[in-house]
Image (tube, rainbow, N blue to C red):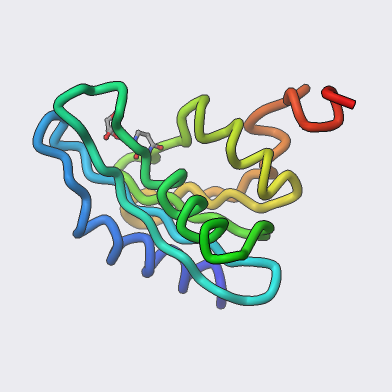
Length: 128
Ligand code: THU
């Protein structure tokens, strides 16, 4: 099943997390609308604000290779659930406004609608 596969890929990607400052590794995996999987891990910087979250790394990898729309995105942090941060929620709404967001803990996961994680999102429509 795709959800379990994405969680497994996110767990694998988490192993590459570069987290010398937080020691808080996170992995993410997304499914594009045409069936490709992209993964990401968090990549920190000594200038903390330059840190990239796992979710955004996965999205940016996909978009930079021509895949601008995703339907599912799984996030794996620690044993407890790790929810996408506010900046990631904004980026999720840009490229996966109707996506299922899978937040996975050690043994369980919860599936959210992207829109429920960022209600009343500011989107490109607002700029028209
Ligand atoms: N982080 C993520 O990669 N994704 C999340 O959903 C939450 C936070 C990262 C950013 C930073 O490297 C570390 O977790 C601690 O904030």
